[in-house]
Length: 149
Image (tube, rainbow, N blue to C red; front, side, top):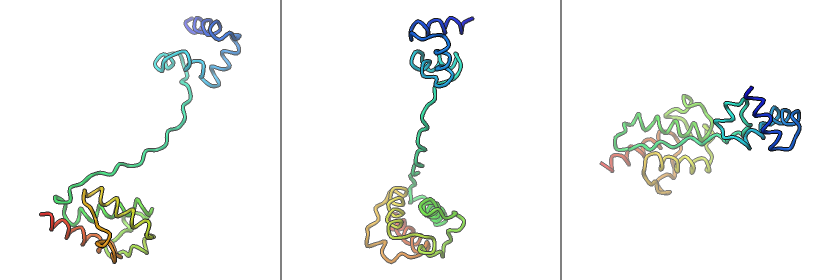
């Protein structure tokens, strides 16, 4: 009964025939969304179609390097390298060479920037030169941690 009242209101408001209103309503939901709020549209039936929103980028979790153990630092670096290169995290080992993990110079710069944001530190360019293994990166961060204490 309530649907027929609604249909009559739509016919009057849109100047269409009842059949046209129903067709538009079922196909697009545009009439509903134009005339009713979301909560009212839900009560009436189908919701209007929405564009898929892009998946948000994962937020970088800020960590305080002062309170991290070497194992925590290694785990975080493994995660950063894994996300940047697409290599499974368990395949990023302490003795892994960055080149063998598919890290090129651009990836290395991005990994360094993510590490800076994650650990809340600044890493000068001259400090990262010559780092070729995961162990080198972890050792550098452990030394930085020690110098902060």
